[in-house]
Image (cartoon, rainbow, N blue to C red; front, side):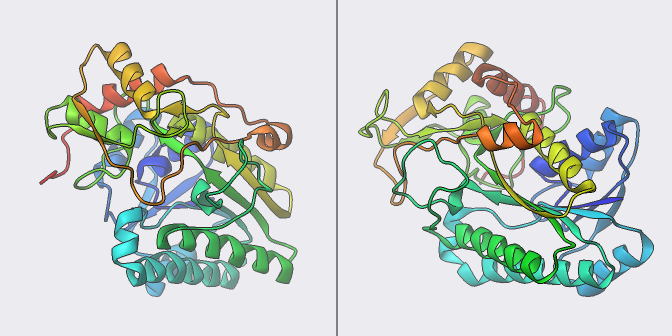
Length: 336
């Protein structure tokens, strides 16, 4: 049985669907701080199976104990965590306590119940800012904000855990920029409040919930002066988790993989792809660069392809089309 922490969230819910479709038994844990309980209904509608759900927090050790006592959990896919870069700069202790302390409590509970398989949602934010592209899993590490630091600290904790106990099977997945939504339009990215990420912000502008999109900087050394990132369809990302689980199901060891497409798209290219694929105009303006932003970031996915058979299937227009298909029929959280 697989426990998904943060399993009603954006990436967690899509991975839940893929695992159920592979006939895996799953359990979802979520505190619903940035997601809704109705996601469980949507997962059931898509798959025909309703996963067992616990509304609890990783900081609640009694809640964790209850889950592990009541279920024989063989593997944890650890999505749960606060993830807004700007908020992490304003509230670093909140992020350290929630993300790092919560993970420690999870790992201690896993160890107590002899659960020694874990897949961790890391991030491309663990890579330093001065880099040769594409980023490989061996590129230098370094972080510029507390959110990224929590990801790097947890990666290091898991490395240390593997050194101490070779029976652990661990996968560290460094995501690039997930966008898109399930083809059904029933699950997707629906952040609480003002979005931090590009695609949900574009969708809110398209729905006239926000007046315009700010494009931060148009003087980078890129194809059109705007920042270039590696956007990956959340459905491809979910498949990456299933492939990672297949890798450690019968293997110990620790493995690190980039999950991206290996291609970079600029902000303006994403806007144009969204407009073209959805026949919607996006109102945007050029704003000053943000501190800490770099011109270009994209992944090398060679290692993931060779070791677990991962290769992204979807292009940017499909990502834009699926994002809008979900967003235009979804009641948004408060954007005030």
